[in-house]
Length: 164
Image 1: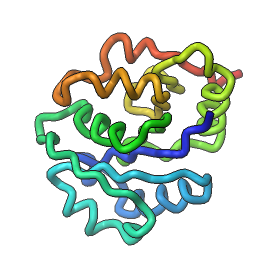
Image 2 (image 1 turned 30 degrees about the vertical axis):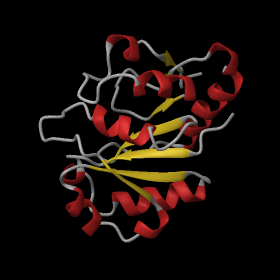
Image 3 (image 1 turned 45 degrees about the vertical axis):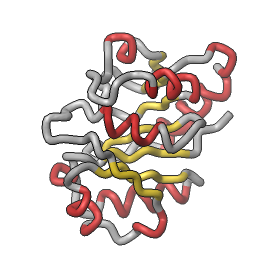
Image 4 (image 1 turned 120 degrees about the vertical axis):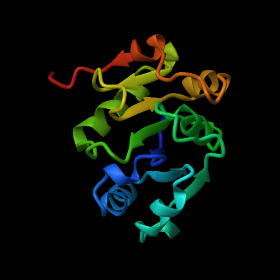
């Protein structure tokens, strides 16, 4: 199994990102044969004005996003409802992951299919790139949109040691 969808969290984060971060990320994702989904919150107009690659992305508006939604779970959940397969989740205000990070996450997903791991991560920082498996997506979709996320269980997700 491979994850081809990348949920790009922008809600409340656009001001923190470089002006061309979204265009560069979309180009890189398309080069990696990924399908970018742009998750927009109440500041969606600001994000759309800064992006010249809108024809290359799927756009999802998160009607539950609010300025108080610091952990962005409602946006994650809105994106997960758009796909039934595994999905990468990347925040636009974070550095774009290296090729090694993408490869490690994809390899972990292929090799660990039987364990039904919910979330793979590459660091202890929950705002870094993560991979939610199809099984994990089902579980996360059952939580209320305004739930705290990540929870302690999510933080204890399968971590990949990138130093080896």
